[in-house]
Length: 292
Image (cartoon, rainbow, N blue to C red):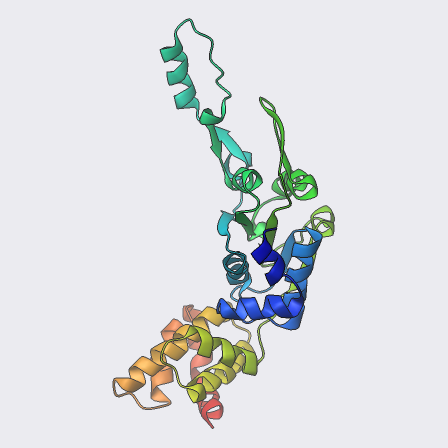
């Protein structure tokens, strides 16, 4: 960890202040989890509903540590070739042809394609690894990750074992669409990110939105909380709340009065046809109560 990272990770409070400067508001629990993950050299596992800010947290951590974010987006069927490394077979064949009778090492670095885990392994002091939506992968891929997360090393049969010179910063996110293996959980510092309360969400909107008044931000936060209380298929996330505040403000400046501006901008908050139909009869009441 470089000097600036050590200063930033001096305490959970220092982490929280640095994240806020990066336009991410972390509560005490998240700031403490980030602090412990960095100080203990353990991966940070963030779970929560879609839209609560798990991926944004990883981006903010990379920003405050002044490191590049290397993102591995998980999906069903992801394998070692996409996560660890891959050999450039075409380049190997061309090199063999050009070499003729001369000996050539086809497993030289120039033929190795670094995927996200190997990229971070080679330069842990300059990169933060984000393993995004790990719950979308299968148990076989989790097992593949265990060696890396346990000892921060990768075994390449043709080259041997490559080990990180220092402990990298690793963030894993999960929407909890399935249970993760206990072996994976044990290797991580864990934190559950819930939807923020109205006060914190209003602060987030003020921080991340454009020209939005404080009263509008508070009304949006209160209204979104009321909307999330309904059994929607896709509850709106924090990013959608920010977009709704921006869109409603634009419509108000273009001549749509409150609360009509909120209703007209509902398409940036709720993005599912059945959810829109379900919430429509309640929307005026929710908005009026939020504005009151």
